[in-house]
Figure 1: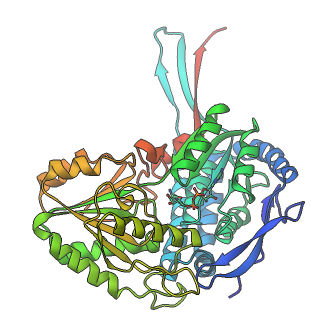
Figure 2: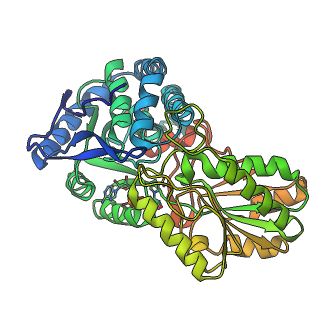
Length: 479
Ligand code: NAD
C-alpha cells in the first residue's frame, strides 16, 4: 500500500497550489517522508472563496431530503473504503490500525447522523397577539463555513464539522492538519464523489496562520469551527470576533479521573489504561490527572504500572501493536519536558520517562506517582502517554483540586456508589463526564467543553444548530 499523491480540492478540481509551494508529510513510525503536501497561495484561497459563494447558492437550494441522500451516500463510500483509508491514516498519524479503522467508521457514522439530522431542522409557528397575524420561525444555513482541524483525529474531527455544515445547507472550506492530510483528503473525496456540488466542499492546506487569516478576513466566511490548542483557539476566536463570525471552539482538556475506594480495582484499571493509552494519549478528552482515594492508592499505582509495562509498542500497521508512535517530534520534546519537571518537583517516575529508540517517534507509557498539584504535568495538558497519579482524601478535597484548572472538557469518576456518582457528576466542572467508563463521545451525544476548553457543541442534534440562523417572519394576512 502506497501513500497517495496529495492534492487540494478547489472549485471542483483536485490540484496542486498555483505557486508550487508545499511541505513534507512524515511517517511517525519511521521518521521518513511519505509525500509532499501542496500549499494554497493567496490566489488559490481567493479562488476557493469565490467558488464557495457560488457553491453555497447551489447547495442551499437542494432540498434537505436530497442533501441527506448525498451525505448518506458519502457515509457508505467511507465504509466501502475503510481499509484503504485506515491504512493511510496509520501511515501518517501513527495510531494502531484497529484505532484507525474505528476512526473511519466513526467518521462515516457522523456523516450519516448529520444526513438524518439535516432533515429534521424544523421551524415553528408562534401564535400572535392579534388574530390577523402570525409569526413563522425558519432555520436557514448560516453561509460559508471554515473548518480547521488538527492531526490527532485526522478524519473524525473533519467529519463532525463538514457533515454538520453540509447537512444544514452551508458550503464548507476545510483546512485540515498539514501533518496528516491524506485522511482529510479521503474524507473530502467521499463527499465529492457522493455528489456534493463543486464549491460546496473544498479542501486547502498551507501555513496555518496565513490560511486562517486570509480566509477569515473575507466577508464570505460566516462561521468558523476550530479544534486544537487553547492558545491557537484564543487567537482564532479573536479573529472571528473582529469580523463577527460565528465560532465553535473545541480546545484542549486535562481530564481529572476520580477513583473512589469502593471499586472493582482490576476492572477500573483495565478501563483506565485503555482510555489513557488510546492514540498514545494524544486525545483532548484523554484521562490525564488520576486522583485515587487513599485506601486504594498503592494498589492502583501498582496495577497501572504493570499494565503500562505490558503494553506492546510498535508500528501501528502491525496487528500485535497496542500503541503506536507519537505523531510528531514536538510531542517527544514535550514528554521529556513534563518528565524533567516532574522529577524536579519530587515526583516518582515509575515506568517510561524517556524516548524509545531513535527511529520513529516512540515514547513508552509513563507513570508518574506523587506529582504535586502545582507541577507541570498536573497543570498543563500532557497530550501524550503520561499518567500522573496522586491520592485524595474525600470528595471535597478531590473536587476542589480537580476544578482548580481552567480546563473544562472531560472528567471521569469510578465508584459503585450511586450517591457518590451523582455528586461527582454535579460537581466536576466539565462539559462531559464518564462515570465508570471512558467512552463519552458518539455521533448522537453532544461534544462540548466549558471554561477555557471552548464553546459550541459538535455532534448530537445540538451539533447542527451552530450552522443555522433563526429567522423570524411576522406576517399579517392582509396588506
Ligand atoms: P498547535 O497549537 O501549534 O496546533 C494545533 C492545531 O492547530 C494544528 O492542527 C495546527 O495546524 C493548527 N493551527 C495552529 N495555528 C493555527 C492558526 N493560526 N490557524 C489555524 N490553525 C492553526 O499545537 P500542536 O503542537 O500541533 O499540538 C500541541 C497541542 O495542541 C497539544 O498539547 C494539545 O493541547 C493541542 N491539541 C488539541 C487538540 C484537540 O483535539 N483539542 C488536537 C491537537 C492538538
